[in-house]
Image (tube, rainbow, N blue to C red):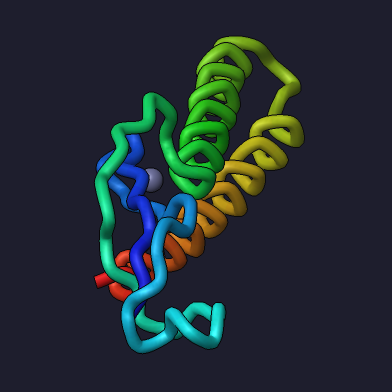
Length: 110
Ligand SMILES: [Zn+2]
């Protein structure tokens, strides 16, 4: 077991930080073992990489939705609306995948 810092991100997710200390078992070999223990928890002001990506995609969805609303009041915009709806669908899939990735990461850590 070796000791690491743990970063607590603004979104509530955790991320491993710097390596701090070997455990007595691994001390002589100078290598780190697979088991990680928390030395200290550090609060980080940023969201984790995955949550940042999710936020960006959610913003893109909102933009597309606003465009659709505007286009609905105009004529001859059917094709543009369909294209935007496809984009929204794709973004939602990507968000779903990122949320799955985020969850499996949390399980790894604990
Ligand atoms: Zn996060």
